[in-house]
Image 1 (tube, rainbow, N blue to C red):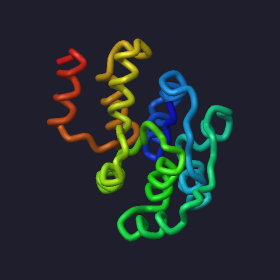
Image 2 (image 1 turned 90 degrees about the vertical axis):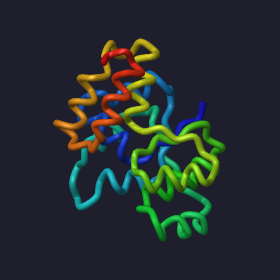
Image 3 (image 1 turned 60 degrees about the vertical axis):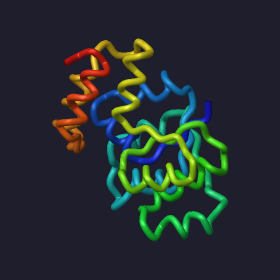
Length: 162
């Protein structure tokens, strides 16, 4: 399975100490250099930066289709635009992305997309975590992740933690 990640799933999972779930679930993660740039933006070491740097299972790529990236940059940030372009170049099975506009653009290009919440659901389904609730709470509390109450309740229902 070929999986490409945008910045948000990497930073949010790292912030709550669950970065390695990506390796357990998908084996290898591919990311464009635009995501690496975002992990180092402003000379700061964002959560996930060090984890990505030391993980040989995270593969960095230079996106070739610059015309597509340029077109996508009208509505998206560079990490999102490059992640979508890389998915198409690699014929990826899955894109990890949280941002609403980026997800919409990816779906318009026929890509399968899940976000960090979907990763946590998959982790529970595969026995890598026992409960999702503490990680949803940590995303909100530690990472500042915006999660609508209706989605929070829905997720807890589908993972049988309501």
